Structure formats: structure tokens, C-alpha cells
Length: 452
Ligand code: KET
Image 1: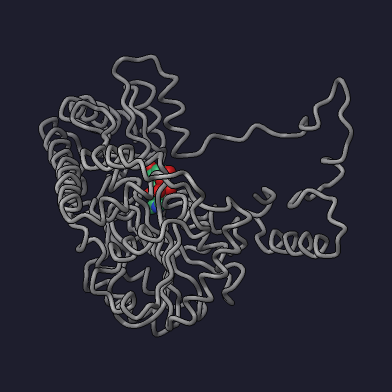
Image 2: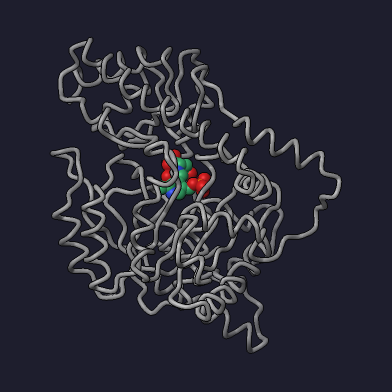
């Protein structure tokens, strides 16, 4: 979308975008938007040299690249614990029954057409998504202070929110947790927002560095944006307690810090959709403003359908209306309007109380299977007498275990045991099954006994 330099100097990216816009408005726009060196784009093709000759090979994405490496490995025992994608006990991807049923209904409904959706997406889907995360009785919804737009899953929702803030919010600094999902810094930096970190995880206790968090947010400039994982923090699996959330809320509100929630795992932490929305709801209950990016990739297993929503909770309906009008201007030149199919599935399920009920049961079953994998892996390591305290495996929450294994141990496990995971030592518990636990436990045991 913009030049690769943006990561290093977001302000120059914003400058470039502004000057491209000025040139465009002056009617002299002949350059490629975002290109720093227009001579490259303008150079004539010749028989021998590619106009792309100067382009360097980029490295694979730290998470999705793990799947690329896994796919190339011919070993029959290979195991992909990289990307956060749910697998059954048989190691197979899962399409929820309720999703299949909703799809059947959509296919059989001859009144359905394939017209474009509005720029903001499917109205029912938006309304029901806000209700799902904010609660059916949310005063903000009742007072019409929430604007929700359908976006391309969680990532697209974050990206639209970031772009909106970059254009219309006065403070261009975001604080994100250290560590966080690897795509967060890129999404915000490419939107022209300066990325800073706040302390979150303490490797010594394998728990929350709450003091560090409070200190860092306490010294953030007034009005700064703060990214918060709504639940099931990725990659650490460590969430604040309700009391700690309350302290975070008070601190943030006292400093007018703007909360931007990333909710990619609602229902996956506790198995309960309402409990997993607790953090977001306390921030909305105080009447203040916030942004929420929702993803249905994990909790409805709709990964490839790219279904998500961005909600912006505002002080008044009037502000919400104007915010929505500007969100449309962000979305229209990016992808015009979002896809119909996935949002229609979600809307069907959320609208019908039987289907909703069926979904919560299937969701709970996924969450429970992950929890049972935690216990199995913990027991397997204890039975092997693997050195170290592995209790964090059962204490952590959500899809991932942040094992504490280092980069060398991870490469050893990949080379010797064909186990694929991200280099920070994160494993997707959702990719594990009773059959593969012993293989993983053998690999961890060998890694920690042979390598420091
Ligand atoms: N936020 C968080 C915290 C997150 O872990 C993911 C995905 C997303 C947003 C985006 O999901 P989307 O598919 O755009 O709705 N995380 C997994 C997949 C990925 O990296 O894309 C992962 O961490 O493995």
C-alpha cells in the first residue's frame, strides 16, 4: 500500500501520502503513489533488464512462513504448531456444524443475490457483531453511539481503525504490549502511527509484568493510543485479572489514553463469550470512547472467509455518524466494500437463538479440547522428568503456550523432530492432539536437556 520505508519512518510515509494527494488535487498526478523513486517506475523496459531487477527477496512472515516451511517437509511425523488454527483430535481443520448449516440455508435461499454490499458491509452483521462484543444490554448500543463497519477479518479491522486514527486522531502514537502478535507493529506503522511498546510479560515469573505495564502507560503522553488484547493474549497466554483490568482502565481514563481492543479470541479463553468480553465491556460501561477490532477467524472457524468488524464507541450519536462517514472514505479506495458470504454466515448464526446456542456449544468444545491438550502436555513432560517448571502450560490461557524455549531449541525441534513453531517458542495448542503430544514432549525433553 505504501513504500517499505514506512516501518522505519512513519512520518515520512505520511508526508509522501500527503504530497501525492496534493499532486493529485493539482491535477499533475503522474507518479505511482507511494513510490519514492519515480524514475524506477518510469524507466523503459528493455529486452534484457527487468524493471524489477533491483527488488530484493523478502523473508517469509514469521508466523505464516512457518506453514510454508511445514508444507515443504516430506516427513510423515511433521507437526505444524505455528499458526493459530484449530485442528481436531484427528489433526484435521474443522468446519463447525452450525457453519455448515448456515451455509446450506444460504445456498437454498433463492431470494439471495450477489449484489455489492454497502461500503460499511452487511447491516445485520454489523449490529449483531457490536452486540456480541459489547453485550446485548450495552447502553452505548442503546444510545446509538457505536458505529460498526464490516472489515476483512481481525487484521483488516485493525488496519481500517489504524488508518482512520492516522487521518483523524490528534495523537499519532500507539503503545502495544511487549511481546505482541507480530503483525501489530506493521499494521500501525504502515498507517503512519509511531509504535512504542509497554512492558507486559515477565519471563522470570512467566506472568504479567503489571508494575511495568502501569509504569509505561503511566508515562505515555496524554491521548496516546493503547492496544489491548481483549482476552487470550497472543503470544503469552497471560491476561490481567479483572481487578488488574479495572486498574488499567482507571489509569488509562485518568490520562485520556485511547483504548484500541484487538478481540481475535472471544470465547477461546474461557469458553464463554461474555466472560471473554469483560475487559472491553468495563471500558464501554464508563461512558468513554474506544475502538474494537473483532475477528471470526478462530471463534467461528471462518479463517479464510475473512470476516471481522471494527466498532468505534463514541460519546454521542452525532459523533458516531460523522465517524462512520469518514470510515467510508477510508474503505472505498482500499477495497470498495467487503465480501458477502462470510458475513452472511455469521449474521445467520447470531440472529437465530437456536443456531447461536449451537455455536456456543461447539465453541466451548474447541476451548475445552485445547485445555485438555495443556494438561496432557504438562503430564507428558512431568512423566519424562523434563527439567524445569512447566506449570505455565496449564496456567496460560487461549490458543497458545509461550513455552520459554529459545530460538536454538526451536530450530533443533524443527530439524530433528519436524515440529514447526514460531521462533519465539510459541506453540499453538490447538494444533496438538492426544496422538501427537508424546512426540512433542520427546522433542521438548531432548531440546532442554541437550541445549541451553
Ligand atoms: N489479532 C491477533 C491477536 C491475532 O493473533 C490474529 C491472528 C489476528 C488479530 C488476525 O486474525 P485474522 O485472521 O485477520 O482475523 N493470529 C494468528 C494468525 C496470523 O498470524 O495471521 C496467529 O497468531 O497465528
